[in-house]
Length: 105
Image (cartoon, rainbow, N blue to C red; front, side, top):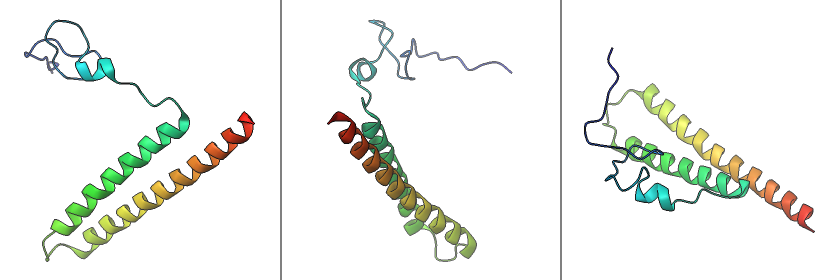
């Protein structure tokens, strides 16, 4: 099987965005600063979970009335687990921030 090769020109070395030849990094990657602390990284993770939950709720609301009950139950269960994951990540973040504050004193 032949590997896929892009015919649209060079791509950013960090992502798949095409670059115009003025460098090997796209404008976004060139100016992006990743989160510096563990707390910021966890906050980003919680935001991603919230986005996924929002997408899942949209899917749930858009299901036809004759959708299989067990499929709906599984989707609702998954959304509840995602909510609980966000709560637990927030809790872990609070503990880590409190611990870091004690260490700084």
